[in-house]
Image (cartoon, rainbow, N blue to C red; front, side, top):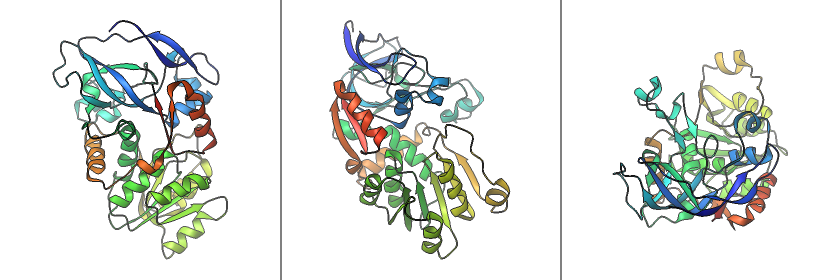
Length: 346
């Protein structure tokens, strides 16, 4: 397809972004062109927008960013056999090499040569996006584009929570950004006996409560370790899902987990974090897991199943909608923490 499109471009190595007119991407024989119907703002996009230390070391402007979306296939390469024009789709955002030891043993989500859509390549804050067909996830047409656009971050929540058993266990979700809020719903659907949500933001704690948290803790007003100790009869929680990236909160997570428990870390601290390895990891005999992306495509099947069954309803945490032209309003809400998930419509 020839022509121009509007897109949000990370234009320079500084804070902010611009709405610009750019070329519609051209596809190769193994790619599809997708008309973007809904695209949601991720915490990673906020890192890039605010131009923090991580983004300064990782991304190379100018380019189109954004990586969470849903849309419709409008063109496909001659080698593409798994998709048809008109299919409703989303995408796994990790483009993998298929050749490294991890890929060759089925661990595609930790491919050592991963490129991330909207981070290392042009992304989906645009009217169209071109992607390899092997990265495309076909959606049922009954699934709204808004909900379909948040499957990728929901996959992060599912991967983090279900990295181990949670049925009948106490789970603490530290950090109630949109992924943390979805993790609350996933933990509840998976049978957790208690889901304790911790954050400093009352707006987002209210959303966590709506998603099924049994207890919400504003760590600015209460000592989270005291609250957890009381809720667990002094034993600590079985599972900690760390999604805040804040050094204090992360340390609290290691201190609140019970002996033999699990700490799964999805957050991306911008600086090294000091942890008491001796007392909070070794002597406790806990399992610590780093979580990146989603298992391809095991996690996507879990996400699709949870949504289609109605066991997890993400509608409450999709709080704002804007046309693509008003992207700055969405980013400011994300920065201020006065939203759940923000969806942009090209």
